[in-house]
Length: 429
Picture 1 (cartoon, rainbow, N blue to C red):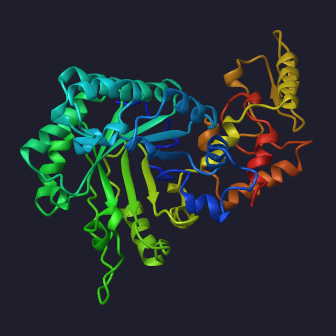
Picture 2 (cartoon, rainbow, N blue to C red):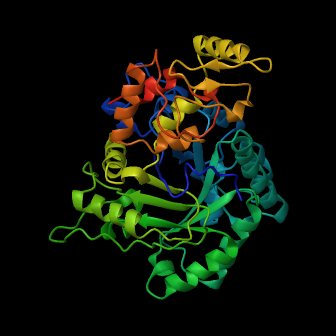
């Protein structure tokens, strides 16, 4: 399985993201990206300060180049995840010749002369293997950098729950490198309808595949993506039942779809429904995060939807901005300050005091007392912050020149937190 974040900071937390970062209506509306942000890398750099993950949608249509992926990786901070949609050929069993990697088109044309649209059965086993190798190789670039999330396979409406198609899903799992986490979304509702959901769930558990929980509108689901005409006149909007089933304790994966029109904001009722499901109906066996991806592409509506739901989740929402404060590179001044602290603690038998009068002796770094922290894990401390915590921190910062040690504190290093990062986080509204 992929090495997804194992830190307890993400366990059972909801990590919001969007299904892409370059939708044309989002770029043109000017509501999210500053005017100065022009390149794909700059957009991603801006996006990654707001969200901890994103879905790569373009990989559906063509396998990205390694150079492109490396460019994306340079634009995001530590801990940011890319969820890649699987190359569409693997899901639909066919694609246009021009969708294949350039270096493979000649081989395929020689095998299938005169064909512009290639079917899986047209290809020899060796060419199929080479295609998988090309896809896996790209994913390894993201994984090696520590930025690979989930590989999402979306199977279309025509992909019915048959033994042949089950075998095809298993073929995908076998050819996707074992170190990658796989999630499957079935557009055909027959896979998750009524009692079929139970058998589908058991089967996916045996395969080690996560079932995507899809939020879709009935009329949009049964209209082809390029033939969306909106809600038929006289009909009411119907949200299809969400397949809320855990098939992999490492993570859950949610995708919200709204495919037509310019009004894709979820209603207050819809947001409350999701908040209730997440807060009260989360499977107890889940150990990892819930990736919640918004496919409501119209201007900044995915971002608005994400913020709206996040506000209803309280401590269950993953605080990405706080984590970034803790993992951001130290400034030159901070580095200099830490070096002075380190030098002052060298030697043995030296006893100094905090301004509050607390003694600090020649203990190991991990045993020293901190006036700035009350927990061993700084990430967990900042993630657990609430209104009172922020007020306490503000009081602490106002007396930074003469820190006061509060009550019972756990022995940890004085050098693990400086007021600069605390100010940056708690100073925001």
